[in-house]
Length: 130
Image 1 (spheres, rainbow, N blue to C red):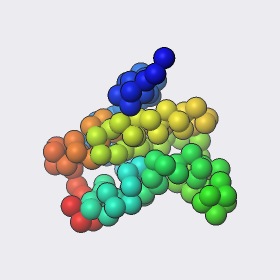
Image 2 (image 1 turned 135 degrees about the horizontal axis):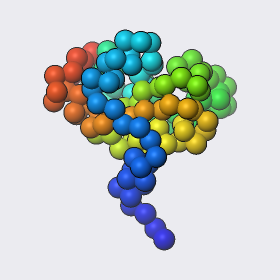
Image 3 (image 1 turned 90 degrees about the horizontal axis):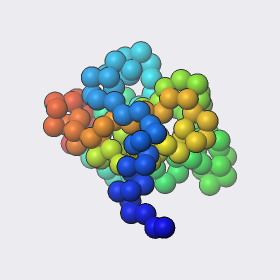
């Protein structure tokens, strides 16, 4: 059986937690890291305040310090028992990223429903080029 990207995102959403902007703000205020899984160019054009950029393509490798990323783990991915917030443009890549982190042993990877687009549409703050 073959799957479309939309099928994979739907499957991911069935097993991960998605949050709204208000919940994101509350978690971030309590110290939960926010990771933008978009590409660096997208991040440079605008991102959530305080977010760090770890593109979806290298996320799993940065968890444990893969040689492809100079054998260094990203400190924002250093604790697997606490929540970590992920977002992308519309929520698809971050849902897939949350599912991957969950499979890798993270207890609470959460994805911003609607992603960056929804964040901006609902008046969310931004840093960078917007």
